[in-house]
Length: 302
Ligand SMILES: CCCCC/C=C\C/C=C\CCC/C=C/C(=O)SCCNC(=O)CCNC(=O)[C@H](O)C(C)(C)COP(=O)(O)OP(=O)(O)OC[C@H]1O[C@@H](n2cnc3c(N)ncnc32)[C@H](O)[C@@H]1OP(=O)(O)O
Image 1 (spheres, rainbow, N blue to C red):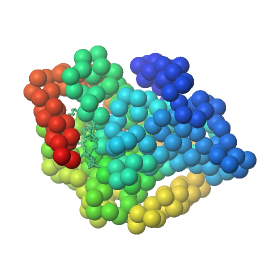
Image 2: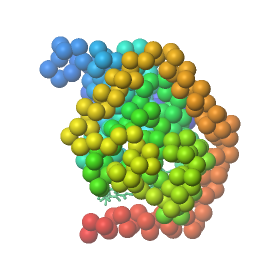
Image 3: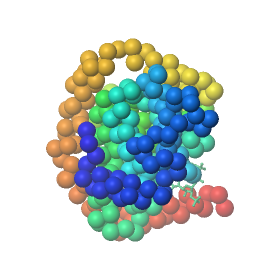
Image 4: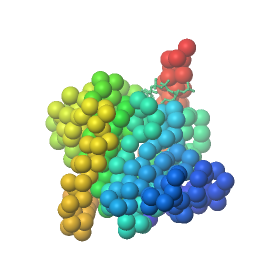
């Protein structure tokens, strides 16, 4: 699946601004530091990719501090890196994890949703849709190694993966807390959750805006495994090895068959979903709520 129009334009703009990228220009992997070991580590500003071509696996580390919020730049860079791996036959699986201590992702970047114009909100929401579609429909095996708090849009990313492994730390909660913020999750994210934990559990989780700590997350099935923090990466890689043992063609056709209807319902109603979001986020009352919420987040430290 290729990048959608708006995101592709932004991706091109990012690539044109090649000076922004630390390390190699994307598409031209460089040898890892120390070199000569056959690995092709590459990075853009906000995503670090550690490839292991011999295993057919890459680890993507989200590194957009402080909290890996889903800014337009972050989502664009993430999708460029993902596409690069998808286009390289050496890679069949990706582990997604965070490089920001204690936070997998704080979800939507609220500064993108505050005080901007409708065209910006439309571009932003299109990028969120694109992120979800690209991950949800990826041919590769995706394993989320969740090493931090994972609310809302962070949970959106994790839910697209084939497997979720969560580090056992009571602070590392995961879930869709949107109703607690006075917002409703989009239907396609609701469908993704229902496919994962079932209808009844989703009703509770979504209406109450539940954030599950590890034991409860495992019990409800929003994650597949909970492991000690120091075993997260090794567990994710061994889960990956099991999935990689299945012939790719059969596995990804099966994945597509399982996920097609859910993805299609967004693809068919994409523009209406964007319009809905723009109307919602542009309301004065929502803008005020957002400002107050952002202010509270900032004051937390003081
Ligand atoms: C309130 C209205 C919401 C409006 C959304 C509207 C429509 C959306 C409709 C449907 C979408 C559904 C799908 C997804 C929804 C979302 O993702 S909404 C975002 C939900 N996320 C959150 O509420 C998380 C908020 N953040 C936190 O709770 C904490 O930051 C933390 C992730 C637990 C980490 O805590 P800690 O390590 O203590 O870090 P700080 O709180 O000190 O934060 C550090 C700085 O980062 C800024 N920040 C935090 N989260 C965000 C964010 N999501 N977007 C932008 N910026 C964020 C925070 O303000 C700090 O900034 P300063 O260093 O003070 O400048």
